[in-house]
Length: 247
Ligand code: PEP
Image 1 (cartoon, rainbow, N blue to C red):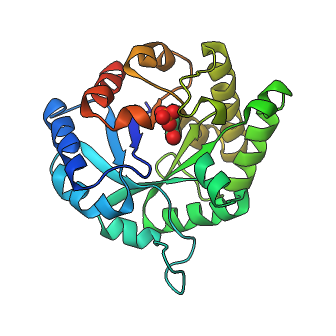
Image 2: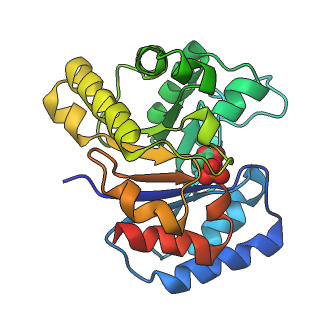
């Protein structure tokens, strides 16, 4: 049985005052059958971890470096995220692929570092609108998966997030059939590469304009084990609505 997961990506949003949203989320979900994860900006990791200590909510990072330490100004290692209270890290988000030119090989190295440090790696894959219109979606996702998922992946340390780039922050969402097609494809690829046991235990998240109003139907799609949520994770009330749809 895969535990449902609601993961919030705050991106480059939030200063200390945003911690009140975490406290409200904590109060709204004193216990939950679903796993709840918030990935705040790195500057808030430590305080966020303290704010949710002893609760059901876990904290994650939004990126990490592939090296353990060294001359990498401005970067953070997986061990540093762990030390700040994170138990997971988002890797290969399309905004990092776009803004920082991250390629599959680098994402794979980061995922290896995250897993070696004991973090869960949430590896993002997804097609652009042009790629979808050219009927290349599954080829793109397949290539991103083989390129960026390391061999040491297990059901414990890997989560795959399918995030069509054109659905992120746009209010546009693929049809339920389109989401199902990609999630079934990802599941089949994982089973083929890692065997049925591991392949079936990895959680698959959908991400892209998930809101309380569309969460229930998206979570009803086969092989959707939860969501990676951007905008609607910033306010406890909105994110709570999405978590409730998983409960
Ligand atoms: C995201 O950036 O991971 C995301 C899914 O954003 P939004 O929910 O705002 O579309």
